[in-house]
Image (cartoon, rainbow, N blue to C red; front, side, top):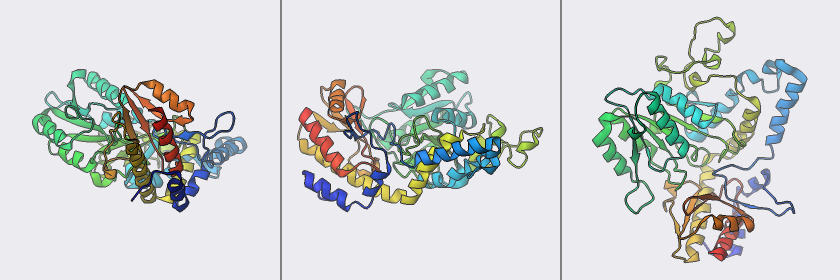
Length: 419
């Protein structure tokens, strides 16, 4: 697409955008005087759909009028409420319904999955992560190693090459080829939180499996952003949060994927609770534990309905629009964003996110030479909400559901004025 660096072009793109109406279905933040913020932090917390209040109020009303009977008599009975989310969530991440469940929060799910899939031996026990993995992932794998009697030093880092920011899949290949006999698990962020790089999940799975390593993926910055095609990729497991691109609210429940090839393996070690016991006999109460098949076999507890109601509101919107249309607009938005940043013509500004749209989601990470957090503060003073990451990167996410081309133009104009 041939872009133009002027406001009229941005407005014309919004006029022609078949998804532009979605913006009106979200609450766009405003200051106390009513001025609208330019919001570029959907990669940290997605905006609230206007329908969310209605979905939550429905459950509050049923709780008020039905009490405990809401488990069976509510408009959306609570007993199996999580099942309302499964099919739509599975479509978003490219999975079969048996492979997906919504439960707990992201790091909790990663730990529960590692209980099952990280099975170290004296010879094969090391864990591979990206060198700049999200801190929670690093802490999780370090604690798993220590729990099993190993050292934090048994983490192997997949690093960018000298003087670069992005990862090369060939370097992971070399790591696994040379050390695969000692590696038990690869736990990789499918979209890196810092650079926005979308990694080739299928190839990562093939590389790991070539040396009998288990492959897990953290999709915190991927779900609702890119199309990971988890089933086809062949990865063993994945987990993600829903409060970023899936717009489900702060601290809302997370998603979990376990590949179908593991669905009927009841011998996998796992922690048990009432909610991953066979639902047919769950209420008999005194039955020996009988784990459910598929991803539901990792549930432990009766889920929080109010959080699930917010997720349901969002997933219904995703299901209506479809990821294909969202990805198409996302590539146009980030393409325009990239074009405008390059038009600034400053040697002090560099986009560290991959140039290839197929290797990134809707986040662009902008490195500003000799900058510090004061730049972020100045953007805030100009009514632009971005996300600062040390030492010198502004993460910006023009989310296709609610960010306009005009937003992108205005944001870059403000940035240009500051640098």
